[in-house]
Image (cartoon, rainbow, N blue to C red):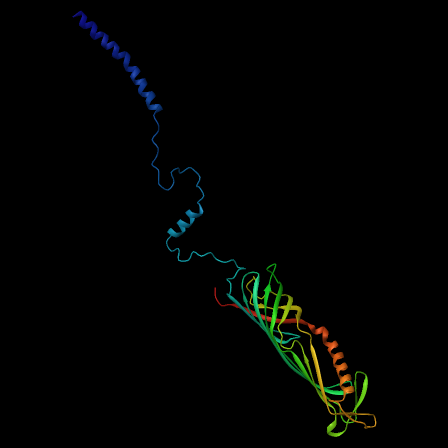
Length: 308
């Protein structure tokens, strides 16, 4: 009995001793246990963290995912100062020593245009007196060509190498020496015979004689402005490298001395023909500088889109 009592008393003391220790251990466990995290959403794992910038691919994906957003066309847009090749046409007119001109051009890229040109002029002038002859002249100009307009700085300045592939610039003149009047050939004085034997002649002046002629011009005024405006005012200055100009004069009739005697046929007399040849050579020398035919043109042009 005594033993049992002692045993019971010992177990009670042990339990009273362990109880405070168990309570203290539970308290420490409660303090050190991790706090349960609040429920997280799929859109932002950490609501307090700053938003990360989207990548280009993410932005495109979100744009495509938004309702009402069109995804039919993904081709990059051209800048304002760019146009697709062969998408714009320019038409214009102007004046130059080649006559009244017309142009048609198409854009190739930002630095190149292809331009076609054509010019014509018919002009008559009468009653010109030269070396004793009364002259009626007719000027006939007709050309067609093409050029590449190069814009080295993509602005208003251009350089245009080209070619005249059609060149029919010429002049004709009718010479008349009235009966009894004097005229000179190579500083030699002759007198036209009377009546139907009075001296007449036909002259032709050729500027290129139909040959192909290279051209080179420089100008201002972009036919296809980067601003997109439609009206332009092109100006060009340059030359056409034509063949040597030609002069030909044929005379018919008779010439006499101052008294109207000793008349000879101008078409067969060697002295008259020699002096005529010398006179033609002088005229030929006068027009020789036109081997580099000057081009100074000014005009107006309108450009528009034919496709986008």
